[in-house]
Each structure stands twice: as C-alpha cells, then as structure tokens.
Image 1 (cartoon, rainbow, N blue to C red):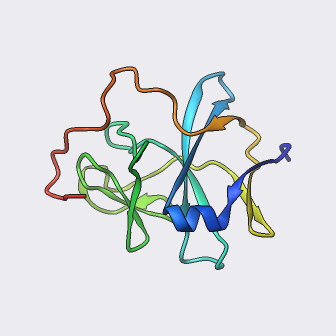
Image 2 (image 1 turned 90 degrees about the vertical axis):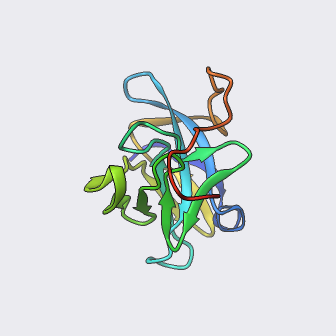
Length: 144
C-alpha cells in the first residue's frame, strides 16, 4: 500500500461540490485529479478521477468553477456527457460507454487520503493553463 497523504476533509468536498489536486503519475507526468461526493455509498464517500473527459481530454474541473455535479453525475462542460460520480461510467453523449480514470483514495474519520501507489501528491489545485484560457467554448446545449 502506498504511503497515504491527507488531501482534505469529506465535509470540504461536500460543501464545495468538488475539490482538485495535482499528482505526479508513475510515468513522471503531472496529472490533475478531482474529488467528488459519491451519493451511492456511505455518507462519507468521495471518489477521485483524473480531471479529463474520456472524449476529448477536456477538463471536468476548472479553477474558479469546480466540477459541475448534477444528480450524482459529473458533467463535461464541452459536450455535456455525464459520468456517474461513483463509478465514473458514462452512458450518454460523446463519451458514451467509457469510464473515467480513477485514482485511489481512502476516507477515514472524515478525512480523505491519497493512497494510490501510482500517484505522488504535488499540490492542491490544478496545473497552470498553458493556453491562458479559462475553459472551453462549449458546444453543448447545457448552460452552467
């Protein structure tokens, strides 16, 4: 088991609706990760997903906005695909029949810990935007 690193509290994830951090993956690359509440599980459950839609590598979590989570699903801001917050599976839109890449976390006494053997915590928040933009120009009919 990996050394665990305390990320945040379950209460913070629930209050903010999502929470992001950046890790170094097993290949030496930096990956953004988002935490979201998982309503299908215990009251203190959260899940962690790589911050990337499976359709076009679109960020699901953006600084200043967070991740859009509606009815237990994480919504891609570009095309509107919706991923189950607990399983990461998408059954609609451009990303249908795909599943988000998971990152192992553990909840203990209301605290969320990174426990993924293939990820090393770097910092809270996202990597800087190289393009200077603050998000996609949405082609979805959804408005946030």
